Amino acid sequence: MKNIIIGTAGHVDHGKTTLIKALSGIDTDRLDEEKKRGITIELGFAHIPNDSGYNIGVIDVPGHEKFIKNMLAGIGGIDFVLFVVAADEGIMPQTKEHFEILSALGIDDGIIAVTKTDMVDEEWLEMLIEDVTDYFKGSFLEGKPIIPVSAATGDNLDVLMDAIIEKCDRENKRREEKELFRLPMDRVFTMQGYGTVVTGTLMDGSVSTGDEVLVYPEGTKAKIRGIQTYGKDTDSALAGQRTAINLSGVDKDELKRGDVLAYKGSAVSTMMLDVKLKIFNSADKTVLNNSRVHLYTGASEVLSKVILLDRDALSAGEECYAQLRLEEPIAVRRGDRFIIRFYSPMISIGGGRIIDALPAKHKRNKEEVLAGMKVLDSGSIEDIVLAKAGERRFIKQDEMAEELGILKSEMNEAADKEIKSGRLIRLSDNTLMSETKFSFLKTGVENLINDYHTDNPLADGIPRQELLSRLSSKWHIDDEKPLQALVKYLIERAVIEDHGKSIALSGFSIEYSEEQLAIKDKIAGMYKEAGIEVIRTEDILKTVGDAGLAKAMLEDLAEEAAIVKLNSSYYIDNDAWNKALDVAKSFSGSFTIAEFRDKIGTSRKYASELLSAMDNMGITRFNNDAREVIGR
Image 1: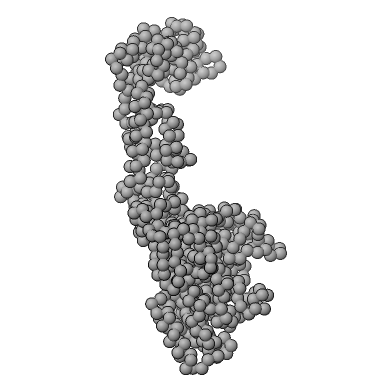
Image 2: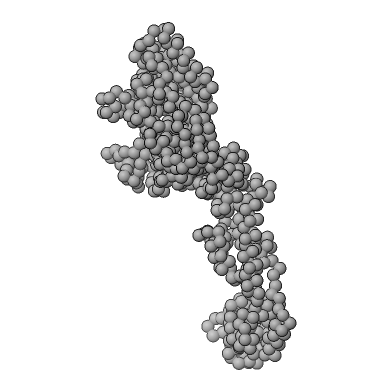
């Protein structure tokens, strides 16, 4: 069955709740205070029975100006609006405010119900409909059905119902892929025998009993114990349904209106938003840079500062890019709509769309920032991926999918396309970066290693861990894993060379003076003369006098295959080492250290060092008191 959510809108006491009761048989005013005062205070919910195969949920919102924040908690998730204007009063203050809010929230369809027609004569009604038609000209409600109706007499209720069914035939814009499940909570309560229950409009995706979910922004784990849609138990719920979910693993006191129930990775918690903000056409106040406002998105309300990125003030009808810096975290998805109201007086002033849910902190009046915002606002998915991958921070592919609110398969397709074009690079840990960003980082790595070569001319490279630590400090990155992946990528592209424990620039070699070359030749000669008698590295260091120089020369001679490193304490002449290998391999079976010593003609001490090195290299294997050759 197709799932549709209708929201009411209109001025207080224009008959929204009475009309919904006439259509559904449900009184959405559930609070004693609502019944006593005769006005809606909290969100009300109903479903409209029909023979057309639709699940039609209704969110009835309060019309009184004092309860606009409650209206905002429910209106954002609707498919179309049932906009109510009373025939005896016409366009009123909350008519205008609700209309501005709906426009800012991107609602694009609706029906206008002119209620209480039994209270006016035909001439007045005709004039009122003309006024309503004129008021909505140029808006999303222009040309939409205007239906005079009386809940008291039942007049035209059938016509209104037919118009609702016709609207339900519209294309479903909600996405039902399970991965995208998200339910902003507009009610949290407990029921005896059930425990914690939350309700909300299932915005995207689907959910099933037994599923593990998270409560954002806190990240609390919970499990779906039971599901109800439209008063009936069910095993699953889909996007576009009013849904009640019984949770286990979390207490009511841990939850609040505005929290979001979602799968891990299908929403983000944030303290900052990049947005496109527009001030209502009817606004008589101006938003100044750094203004403090109430932000409403989904079912949440939070205080925020507005940072205007290209101007000092934003007036009626104007729009610009801005950054909202929040006073507490909320859970959102890129593309979500929002409304702002002044901190004081509490009046609705504007709204817009989130274009980046996890932005960097921006400086104002920067061309590159504004250019990036324009891409995030209106660019293709590939352009947006490239823009996000060009930011200073490291971001993995799955993390970007979460931030952009898209399927991982969509993310993979966009990334693969940009990698093939050469504009995007993917490291071994799935970190993405633009080619421009990579060039910047590559230069940084090369400069750092080059500086080390300059300061340490006799070292074959910078120690690997020191390189990672310096890069981490330079770029303010706590996690070294993406840095390790970057170094690996640069090694694979022959930008830098891996020397084991150290890293050098590609093609780097130690350059010795003539005097130092003479010392290096002397060391090689000492090993050649010693032959099978192993020389302690410590003695070489004493001979040279400069420990750094001696170590560099030993490593160079080993790389040139003049000598072989047995361990940190011993090297041996290469010819002598090959002789030792030949002797070991000459034994047809197992042999003892004494047998090896006698055959090679050296002391037990040196024989032991040689055989231990062979063990470590996998040439021989020690078993009890004997060895055997395993790597010939």
